[in-house]
Length: 84
Image: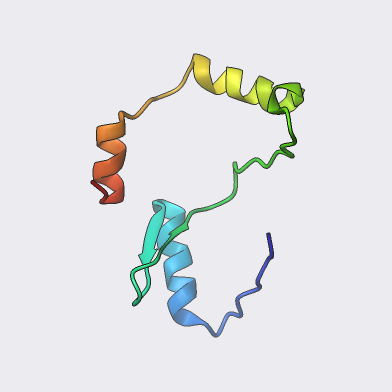
């Protein structure tokens, strides 16, 4: 993954960043491609190899997520993302 620094003069992008702080956004390009713009404050990355079950940190994270917190049905998720 590459990090791209956006200058303060890029007003349109910076306005989108402000909106995304309140709620994640799906950006739709003129060619129909869609991109997700969301804050990374709580984003986690894991190295995934051949056998992901051997990644203790990832397995602990998934176990924690599986045992609590709010859930969203597939139907709700599709509706929120605007897909069928």
